[in-house]
Length: 170
Image (cartoon, rainbow, N blue to C red; front, side):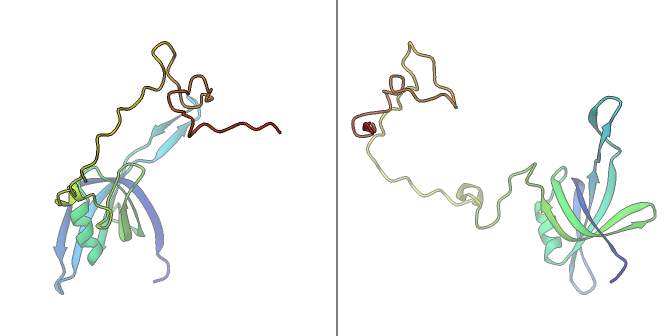
Protein backbone atom coordinates (compact mmCIF):
# COMPACT_ATOMS: atom_id res chain seq x y z
CA UNK A 1 0.00 0.00 0.00
CA UNK A 2 1.29 3.44 -0.74
CA UNK A 3 1.23 6.34 1.66
CA UNK A 4 2.00 4.27 4.76
CA UNK A 5 4.52 5.57 7.25
CA UNK A 6 7.09 3.08 8.48
CA UNK A 7 8.46 3.63 11.97
CA UNK A 8 10.75 2.05 14.53
CA UNK A 9 9.49 1.98 18.10
CA UNK A 10 11.90 1.25 20.91
CA UNK A 11 10.58 0.93 24.45
CA UNK A 12 9.20 -1.33 27.17
CA UNK A 13 6.24 -3.65 26.96
CA UNK A 14 3.49 -2.43 29.27
CA UNK A 15 1.11 -5.07 30.62
CA UNK A 16 0.54 -8.45 29.05
CA UNK A 17 0.38 -9.54 25.45
CA UNK A 18 -3.16 -10.42 24.41
CA UNK A 19 -3.33 -13.35 21.98
CA UNK A 20 -6.50 -13.99 20.02
CA UNK A 21 -7.42 -15.74 16.79
CA UNK A 22 -9.26 -14.33 13.79
CA UNK A 23 -12.34 -16.01 12.32
CA UNK A 24 -10.03 -17.89 9.96
CA UNK A 25 -7.86 -19.09 12.86
CA UNK A 26 -4.92 -16.74 12.26
CA UNK A 27 -3.24 -15.77 15.55
CA UNK A 28 -3.19 -12.04 16.33
CA UNK A 29 -1.46 -10.44 19.29
CA UNK A 30 -1.79 -6.96 20.69
CA UNK A 31 0.42 -5.26 23.27
CA UNK A 32 1.43 -1.78 24.34
CA UNK A 33 4.96 -0.42 24.15
CA UNK A 34 5.83 2.66 26.17
CA UNK A 35 8.47 4.71 24.38
CA UNK A 36 10.24 7.35 26.47
CA UNK A 37 12.08 9.84 24.27
CA UNK A 38 15.31 11.38 25.53
CA UNK A 39 15.51 15.17 25.40
CA UNK A 40 18.54 17.41 25.80
CA UNK A 41 18.10 20.34 28.20
CA UNK A 42 20.49 23.01 26.93
CA UNK A 43 20.02 25.22 30.00
CA UNK A 44 21.24 22.45 32.32
CA UNK A 45 23.51 20.76 29.80
CA UNK A 46 22.11 17.28 30.42
CA UNK A 47 19.76 14.67 28.99
CA UNK A 48 16.41 13.90 30.60
CA UNK A 49 13.45 11.62 29.95
CA UNK A 50 10.62 13.13 27.94
CA UNK A 51 6.92 12.36 28.17
CA UNK A 52 6.15 8.63 27.75
CA UNK A 53 4.41 7.79 24.48
CA UNK A 54 2.23 4.67 24.43
CA UNK A 55 2.15 2.77 21.14
CA UNK A 56 -0.29 -0.09 20.58
CA UNK A 57 1.41 -2.81 18.54
CA UNK A 58 -0.43 -5.49 16.60
CA UNK A 59 1.20 -8.58 15.09
CA UNK A 60 -0.28 -11.56 13.26
CA UNK A 61 0.68 -15.08 12.29
CA UNK A 62 3.64 -16.90 13.81
CA UNK A 63 5.01 -13.58 15.09
CA UNK A 64 1.89 -13.22 17.24
CA UNK A 65 2.41 -16.62 18.84
CA UNK A 66 6.09 -15.87 19.45
CA UNK A 67 5.33 -12.44 20.93
CA UNK A 68 2.72 -13.89 23.26
CA UNK A 69 5.14 -16.56 24.44
CA UNK A 70 8.26 -14.39 24.80
CA UNK A 71 7.18 -10.88 25.76
CA UNK A 72 6.19 -9.94 29.29
CA UNK A 73 5.68 -6.72 31.18
CA UNK A 74 8.74 -4.39 31.22
CA UNK A 75 10.71 -6.25 28.54
CA UNK A 76 12.58 -3.83 26.26
CA UNK A 77 11.66 -4.33 22.61
CA UNK A 78 12.31 -2.86 19.19
CA UNK A 79 9.37 -3.00 16.78
CA UNK A 80 9.11 -1.86 13.19
CA UNK A 81 6.02 -1.50 11.05
CA UNK A 82 3.43 0.85 9.64
CA UNK A 83 2.34 3.53 12.07
CA UNK A 84 -1.04 5.26 12.14
CA UNK A 85 -2.81 7.66 14.47
CA UNK A 86 -6.27 6.36 15.40
CA UNK A 87 -8.40 8.10 18.05
CA UNK A 88 -5.36 10.08 19.29
CA UNK A 89 -3.41 6.86 19.93
CA UNK A 90 -0.44 5.64 17.94
CA UNK A 91 -0.90 2.18 16.43
CA UNK A 92 1.91 0.13 14.92
CA UNK A 93 1.02 -2.74 12.63
CA UNK A 94 4.27 -4.54 13.26
CA UNK A 95 6.23 -6.37 10.65
CA UNK A 96 9.02 -7.23 13.09
CA UNK A 97 9.39 -7.32 16.87
CA UNK A 98 12.47 -8.29 18.81
CA UNK A 99 13.92 -8.11 22.26
CA UNK A 100 16.34 -5.17 22.64
CA UNK A 101 19.72 -6.78 23.28
CA UNK A 102 21.00 -3.54 24.78
CA UNK A 103 18.88 -4.43 27.83
CA UNK A 104 18.41 -8.22 27.83
CA UNK A 105 20.16 -11.47 27.03
CA UNK A 106 18.02 -13.74 24.92
CA UNK A 107 18.38 -17.25 23.67
CA UNK A 108 16.96 -18.95 20.64
CA UNK A 109 16.18 -22.64 20.42
CA UNK A 110 19.65 -23.47 19.09
CA UNK A 111 21.56 -21.48 21.74
CA UNK A 112 19.47 -22.20 24.81
CA UNK A 113 21.72 -23.62 27.54
CA UNK A 114 20.84 -27.21 28.41
CA UNK A 115 20.07 -26.36 32.02
CA UNK A 116 17.49 -23.76 30.91
CA UNK A 117 16.01 -26.11 28.32
CA UNK A 118 15.30 -28.65 31.07
CA UNK A 119 17.98 -31.08 29.95
CA UNK A 120 20.50 -32.26 32.46
CA UNK A 121 24.01 -31.13 31.57
CA UNK A 122 26.32 -33.83 30.28
CA UNK A 123 28.35 -35.38 33.09
CA UNK A 124 31.86 -34.03 33.28
CA UNK A 125 34.56 -36.55 32.36
CA UNK A 126 36.61 -37.79 35.29
CA UNK A 127 39.98 -36.15 35.16
CA UNK A 128 42.94 -35.86 37.44
CA UNK A 129 42.78 -33.12 40.00
CA UNK A 130 43.53 -29.74 38.51
CA UNK A 131 46.53 -27.95 39.95
CA UNK A 132 45.66 -25.25 42.41
CA UNK A 133 45.71 -21.78 40.86
CA UNK A 134 48.79 -19.74 41.58
CA UNK A 135 48.50 -16.26 42.98
CA UNK A 136 48.95 -13.32 40.63
CA UNK A 137 51.73 -11.90 42.78
CA UNK A 138 53.90 -12.92 45.68
CA UNK A 139 52.59 -11.77 49.07
CA UNK A 140 55.18 -9.01 49.29
CA UNK A 141 54.41 -7.66 45.80
CA UNK A 142 51.33 -5.70 44.70
CA UNK A 143 48.85 -7.57 42.51
CA UNK A 144 49.12 -7.01 38.76
CA UNK A 145 46.43 -4.97 37.08
CA UNK A 146 45.18 -5.12 33.51
CA UNK A 147 47.48 -2.99 31.39
CA UNK A 148 50.54 -3.39 33.62
CA UNK A 149 53.62 -4.39 31.65
CA UNK A 150 54.77 -7.94 32.30
CA UNK A 151 58.17 -7.83 33.95
CA UNK A 152 60.10 -11.09 34.12
CA UNK A 153 60.89 -10.71 37.84
CA UNK A 154 57.23 -10.24 38.72
CA UNK A 155 55.96 -12.86 36.27
CA UNK A 156 58.13 -15.73 37.47
CA UNK A 157 55.20 -17.68 38.96
CA UNK A 158 53.78 -17.97 35.41
CA UNK A 159 56.97 -18.64 33.50
CA UNK A 160 59.22 -21.66 33.37
CA UNK A 161 62.02 -22.86 31.13
CA UNK A 162 59.56 -24.29 28.58
CA UNK A 163 57.54 -21.09 28.19
CA UNK A 164 60.19 -18.42 28.63
CA UNK A 165 61.26 -17.01 25.26
CA UNK A 166 64.98 -17.02 24.63
CA UNK A 167 66.57 -13.74 23.77
CA UNK A 168 68.90 -13.60 20.86
CA UNK A 169 71.28 -10.80 20.21
CA UNK A 170 70.80 -9.30 16.87
